[in-house]
Amino acid sequence: MPASPTAPLPDELVWEPDPLLDGFQSAPLGPATLVRRTGRPDAPRGAVLHVHGYNDYFFQDHLAHALTDAGYCFYAVDLRRAGRSLLRPPVDVAAEAGLPPHFTTSLREFGADLDAALSSVRALEPGSPLAVHAHSTGGLTTVVWAHAHGATGPDALVLDSPFLDLAGSWLSRQVNTSLLGVLGRVRPLAVVSTHPSVYATYQHVDNGGRWSFDTRLKKPDGQPARAAWLLAVRRAQLRLARGLDVPVPVLAARAGASGPDSPDNPLLDAQDTVLDTRQLARLFPRLGTDVTELVVDGAVHDLSLSADAPRQEYLDAVVRFLGDRLPGGAA
Image 1 (tube, rainbow, N blue to C red):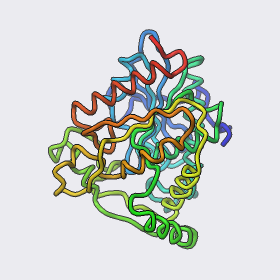
Image 2: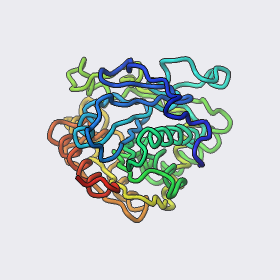
Image 3: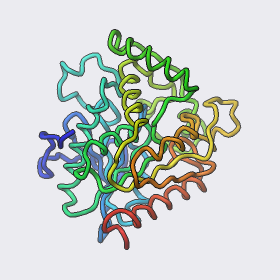
């Protein structure tokens, strides 16, 4: 995937106070949205670009503060049909008509948003090393994109519970893939999975959780999975299963254990209730030749949203990794 030819230059970005977070600015980036923290380190060690997952958007301001305090300029991208990008009219109204949030028929489409974000951040932070921090489906999109970019991509990756495989047995995954191959082409918008996200519901401050987020953009009642979207995800997962060659250092992080996404699960706040962590452990070595696995016991699916102790363990490990492995990142 070549760099996006339509990525705006820094002086073409129209920055406004961010509508969702104090202390941040956002700017349209084609169909996507670029976000940055207004506070900057006095002597930046590099820059970090955050990529959200499915039924998600950037709201983790504590992640931005931790990385800025460690010396990194912080940016995030809300991809097309997600987050802040849903709060303004689409760039191409006709092309977007009828497309639900987060929908795509190929993760390469989101890769174009990453192209634009990478180009913009590099231009805004000339000469600075750049790492991408990506969560869940954003992590899957990012590794396939980074593999395709080779040496022209980011300088390091941090993957927070990347969506590298479907949950379930080998047989069920094969059957689902075969069915998706047909349904994704014939009825691309067909809903193939829909259920409330107990995980998201439990996290929200209104339900006793520790996080405040916009429930229009991260829905506790879940975001239905469409056939073509899941087929696009599955194709990327199968490509990864054959082995990728991400040419930069990768920190691949996961929770210590998985459990059911059920209100009856007493460890709902201490397990990954979205992905199978055993599958992640098996697939991490297939990302490239320079992969460091991080296991955070007591963490949830988004490691940065875990309880205090595992969350701090994760953030400390990310900062150490960037300092050790991001070119020029050492203090």
